[in-house]
Length: 90
Image (tube, helix red, strand yellow):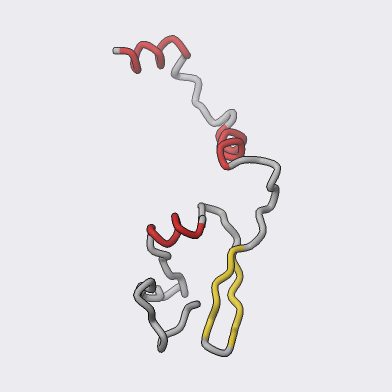
């Protein structure tokens, strides 16, 4: 629950930017699974504003699969597998 009045020991004060953005503290992002591109919704309640995690867009794909899909074909062709292996192995 996001409120300006009832802050608990598990809460953290953050500032709103001029664009209306806030940064969710890293520990809270990890704890609640707020990964990049996670959709959220804000719900107005009796005690303030509630931030809720949205449903995953495609729960059949893992985070790793989505990353590979997004990066596929983005290389510039300068590095071959052999060059990368030599670099990693020294």
